[in-house]
Image (cartoon, rainbow, N blue to C red; front, side, top):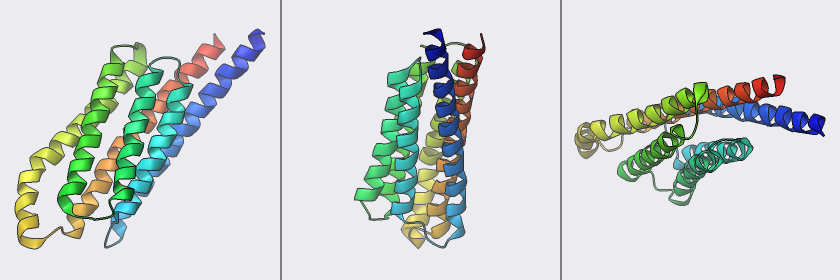
Length: 190
């Protein structure tokens, strides 16, 4: 019976590690998006949906903060669906969705930090902090970009910069999942 529990813990650790690596790979995909002249909302949406689904499944594997982890994945997938459903690539609706996604995710992850301890708490706080920082940077840059968009329209480099925001969030989230997997693996070794 104890062997079955250990196998389950080992599988949980492997699943979380695979999810973390998958999200980090998606961040590499997000970084490569600006290589093209134009980024469609479909591409950003697909990345967000994929990352959100991976994060939600990984959240279901977690022992602690399972509802928070799954909710963070759900918010990411929902933001991606908004991009896929609303195929218009107007600058302001895009920035509003990205800001809302980052703010809601940071709130969910910040709430989760009160429920856990140790290195996972630190990485969860870092992930929440990164999303909050990225949202603040987008909000602060909004006034400057309002002028740029008003004069020149939504320039490709401006829209491409969203890929970097998505990638930064994905990298920290992927590292968080790798830390959770590491802690799960350590608990099986005890």
